[in-house]
Length: 258
Ligand code: KIV
Image 1 (spheres, rainbow, N blue to C red):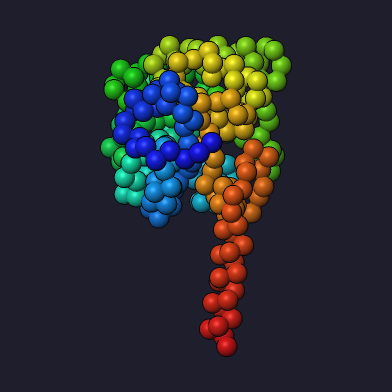
Image 2 (spheres, protein in one colour):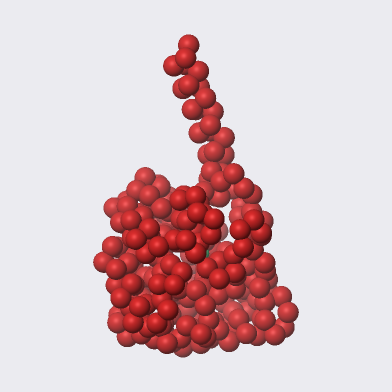
């Protein structure tokens, strides 16, 4: 996948990219300088995801992330992004009812989100419809859904390996599109299923650990630049930011002491 120099000027760009067979490049960012760098690198969509909890805030799970946490990081990212679309997560338990979903998503939009993401399939349709009716663009998220499935210390498990699970995910994807979602994250599903779902839908799919046949890919920025201490199966590292930062700081400390 190559980064696109074209400006992602609005939500229509997402479906246009799919229609033109142009892969969508997405990545997370949680702060102002990183937002500037990813935007200038030509990324199409910047995710202010609840992955901020485990990657930046030192929480054990995404479940600890609050709406205030997301809004705080979202405002910083908004200040750094000039061209990409910004997607923000509705954190765990902030969309228990359609009214909650709309009220909390309005805060995300006010703080700079172009679209909001919630996890789950057919059980979330009422909320997706309420958000769409309120004029708030929605991205779905199915497959491995960290808010409910993540267990600290354990690797995420691939979803939809068996026929029944795969059929359920396809039905979820179709229902979310029907309810008005404009994009869909597929996390940790087999490559063939990622391709099948992507071909079955008009909306673009954005995969993370879902194979090469999705309409786009998203990764955690810390994994991409090599800032995370971990190596995930689903994430490819393109840099050594952690090692470079440690070396720079050790040199600084040594020079001061000398
Ligand atoms: O929390 C997040 O950042 C996400 C994406 C990585 C899919 O949900």
